[in-house]
Figure 1 (cartoon, helix red, strand yellow):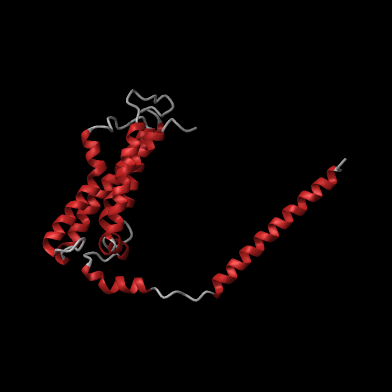
Figure 2 (figure 1 turned 180 degrees about the horizontal axis):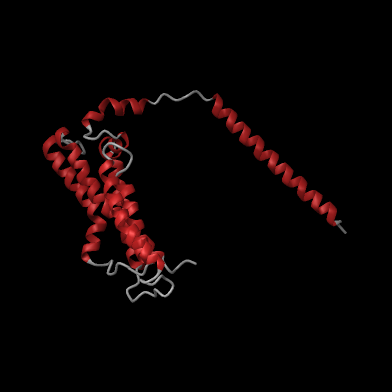
Amino acid sequence: MIDAHDNTSLKNRYVFIIIMAISMLAGWVIYALLQTPAPQNIMYDLVQANIQQSGVTNPVTAVLLNFRAYDTLIEFAVFFCVSIASLPYIDAGVSDHSHLETQDGPLFSLVKVLAPLTILLAGYTLWVGSFKPGGAFQAGALLAGCGLLLSLSNVGVTRMNGFWWRSIFSMSLIFFILVIGFSYIHSHTFLMYPTKLSGRLILFIEFAATFSVAATLYLCYLSVRGKVS
């Protein structure tokens, strides 16, 4: 029969061995990082050298929506596919809101203050993205959070399967394709914006992307609400 004291001692040894192994691995990783020479940021220099042609002064926005716009186009297509996949999970009937706050509760009073501020902050985040950190994805996330707050306050958006909601889901992809066609007419090159109009075209794309991202994120929330504990 194994003594309880010996069993505890054996467990402590295993714990000590695991801690030592993790510590040695972490030390080796830290040592390897310290010995690795600092990389030369060639891409940053290339972006800064050509940022005047992008139409914006924020290097992140310039890369995402001009220099590597093809990647962002694929991301918008992914968002569109996510909305298509989430729509069937929206309940067609009347949802049970008994677990939510009522409109005369303290949460609703707080939402009445936060919702307009969130919308205003989302607009500012969209506008400031051309020259400071921000842009469509951040603004869309703020708007989606506003929708989540309204939903928790029993102010839900219904009929997400309607035509107008489907148009919002696809807005970013449609607007991007329109910009691609317009740019190709002027430059005869795929995804090369006219230099004088590049800033306006990027803002045009980001405006549409804000609503598409917000609607898709809110749709994802509605598709799982009440289905997880």
